[in-house]
Amino acid sequence: MMGLLNHWHGKTVFDRRNAEELHSELKKAKLVGRDEFPHDVVRLNSTVRIKAEDDEIMEIILVTPEKANIKEKKISIMAPIGTALIGFRQGQKVRWSVPAGRKTFTIIEVINEFQ
Image 1: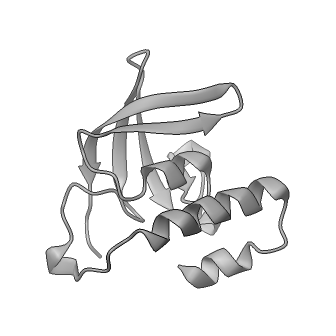
Image 2 (image 1 turned 45 degrees about the horizontal axis):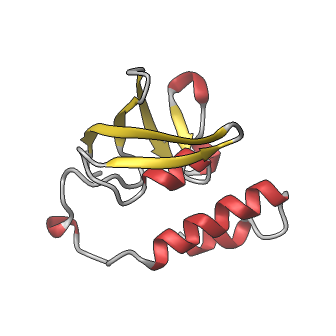
């Protein structure tokens, strides 16, 4: 993951800011084995259903930047929403910054299929 973050060094200000926010979140992380990883915590390759304050429900899959494809609902972990979701659990409320301000949503389902 740190190699991915280092790759983003020198990109646009927006990209660097997202990389810095993700790096900050990763510094708080606790490394655990696959068997210890809670099934309802958002991670890379998680399928996540979120509910916005306006009751809109979205389903996304968090992926590395090169696999991102909005038509397939694959969102980069480097995108603001990707960075916001990492490490949170099903049932938690998450706040994320968007150009129009801050948005709050609830994680209603997390699906992790270890590969």
